[in-house]
Image 1: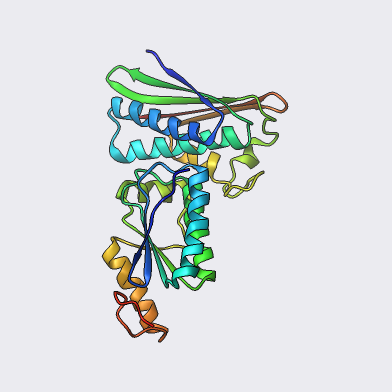
Image 2: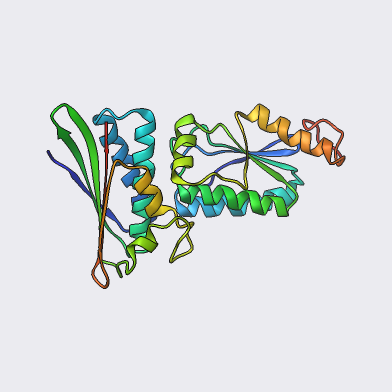
Length: 131
Length: 132
C-alpha cells in the first residue's frame, strides 16, 4: 500500500504531519480516542525530529493484516543521534528545553514502538497503532 | 502574522483556540495575553480549547506557561472545554497540567474565577460588571 513521505523542516511541517496522520488514522477506522493518541504521538515525534534531529522526514503508511487495519509512522533524521536510549526514554529526561515526555509519551500512546539511533548518524523512530 | 483574538468578558479575558497551533502563534498568544491582562486589569483568563482535537506536550507547556505568567500578573487561568479523548491522551502522555485549573465549559470557568475573587475578598461586585 502506498505511503506518504512528508518533510519535517519547520514548525508548520509538524502541523502537516498531524493533519496527514489524522487522514490515515480515519481511513484505518481507528476510534476517536485511538486517533487522538496516534496524532498526539506523531506530533511529539515530529517535534523531536525538528528540535533534536535538526529536521528530517516521516513516512506515514496504512497497515493491513487480514481484517486488521492500522497506521504506521517512521521518523528519520540525520542529527546527532542518541547515545543513551534508555535515558532518553525516561519520563522527564530532556536534552533540550522540553518536558522530556516526547519519546516516552509517544511510546505509551502507540501499540508498537521501536527506535534505532547511531551517534553522529541519526535516529529512526517507528510507531504503529492498530484498530 | 496570524493572531488569536482575546475577548474581554467582564473582569476576565476569553481566548478561544481553534486552529492547529504552531510555535509562533503560541508565543504571540503568550505575549498578547500578558499585555492585555495588565492593560485591562483582568482577574481571570479563560482558555477555551473545545475546538482542539489534540493537546501535545508543546501545547501543554504553553498552557502551563500562560497560567504561570497570568498568576504573576494576579490573574487566574482556567482551561475550559477539553474534549474527553484529549483528556485521556494527555494523562497517558504523562502531562496532567498540574499548574492549570480546568472547568467543563466557559460558564463554569467564569464561576470558578468569580469564586476566587469573592473568597479572597478582593471583589464583591459581579464579574459581569466593570468595577471601578
